[in-house]
Structures are given as structure tokens and as C-alpha cells.
Image (cartoon, rainbow, N blue to C red; front, side, top):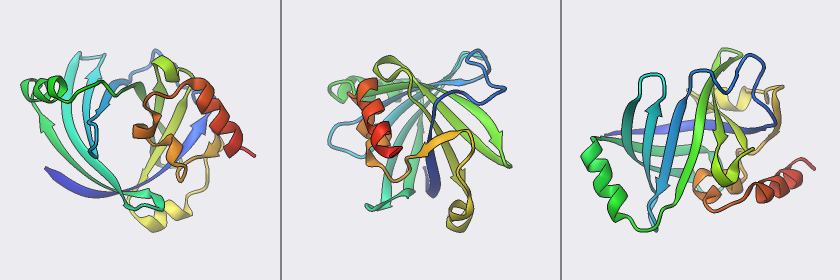
Length: 175
């Protein structure tokens, strides 16, 4: 198990950046949040290789008022272990999205295109090595608005939301 501090900023996008198409190489990610816990059960599939990874993650902000600095721990599971958690955690709290990778100003950007009820939501996540590096980074030109500090846009909170609710929150953020 690895435990680490993550520095990240999150931005809403209206479209994929130029040069990226939905048919490009990506990962399919399925996240299930275990009720009444800070645990996320994650299944990642590479369409290119048809290989799966299974992860149990615990992630929480170091300070409740700062959603840019997170403590996270991951345990890699085999398929049988994953299925035990999946079959015994109660109702499904699944988010599904495709993750694309984009380089911007020497930073790797994870671009998540949500599926299902959240179809149309595109978030860009940028991780940083240090807090100072994160603070110095300017919002990418491809972003509509930064939502790092808006709890509404944390993955666990997106469970059960519709795109109309996302649009309403976007309208509030962009004012």
C-alpha cells in the first residue's frame, strides 16, 4: 500500500483539446464509492490491451476547507478480491468515465469524459509535485472555469447527479 499527498487542480472543459479525439487511446474507469466510508473501489480497463487493474483507494482532503491537497492510499487488488468488495458493499454508487491524457505546459493533464447521467461533463485534472508548483500554475486556456475548491465537483459528490445539475453548478461558478 502506498500513502501519499496529492496536489491537484480541477478545471471544467467544454470540449476536448485540439488534437484529442474520443477514439484516441484512453482508459475506461469505473469508480464505486463504498457507503459511509472514504473508500473508492476502482476498476480500470485499457481498451487497447483489454487488461484490467483493480484498486481500493482511500482519499480525503488533508484540510476540509482545501480541496487541492489530498491524502490518498491505494491497495492493488486481484480480480477475486475486487469482486468480494463489489458484491458486498451494498447499492451501486458508480461513476463511469473515459480518461484521456494531454500534455500542457510540461504537465500531464488527465481529461475525464463522464458517461451515463453525467454525459457532457468534462473535467481536466492536473497533479503537481509541490504545493508551490500548484499555486504558481495558471489556469489553462482550454478551461472554462476552475472548480478545484467546489465540493460539488468531487467524484463522490457526483454520484446520482444529472447533467442538468452540473450545468446549473457551472452557471454559478462562471459568474
